[in-house]
Image (cartoon, rainbow, N blue to C red):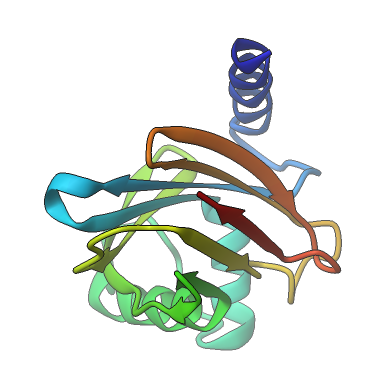
Amino acid sequence: MKPFKYILLASLFALFSFSGIHKYYVSITQIEYVKEKQSVQIISRIFVDDIEKLIRKRYDEKVTLNDGQDEVIIDSYIKKYLLEKMFIKINGTPAMLKFIGKEYDDDIMRCYLEIENVASIKSIEIQNKVLFDIFEDQKNIVRNNINGKNKTFVLIPHKDKGLLNF
């Protein structure tokens, strides 16, 4: 059953990755616990045009992403937004997300975040409200690899949290 899930997710990602205008609103966030580094590493993939629309609406209507201009300002907008919309609790305690940076891959923006000094994970609660405030049909797929267990869930505006216990 697990290979089917990965094939399905890969197919969905490929389907949603075509250039140009798309009618689906989805992000994919991968969360991995690296015990040796005592670190939770997070990569969030968001369509460039979706996050650009949001930044223009919330912060600066003249911004253009992935044109090599104003990257320091754009990073500050993305950091501010992600830290307002993504929340993680580890073992019942709110975790401090650290924005590492972003990079572009064609029409996808990869955002890198990290939670440091995590000795162990017995439970993790993830809330991802990214783009819910601009697209009512936005879906945020969250893939987790924690303590050797893989779990995936889809978050939607009226169900924006997932909880895993180990």
